[in-house]
Figure 1: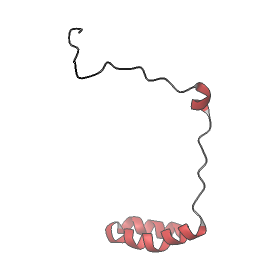
Figure 2 (figure 1 turned 90 degrees about the vertical axis):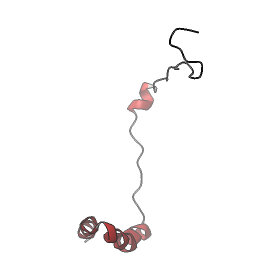
Figure 3 (figure 1 turned 90 degrees about the horizontal axis):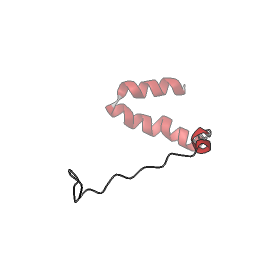
Length: 65
């Protein structure tokens, strides 16, 4: 065993880099929420958020209007 080596910790392994094409590819597009999800967010979720974060909830309400 090499000086300073630990019998319990395995030697570090090189982590391969992503292929350049994969790294430079455009990020995936995530679709926005559907109408039902938006309605839920603007009603029930904002009401629940207002209990703990009233200023943030008010900002969301203003942006939804």
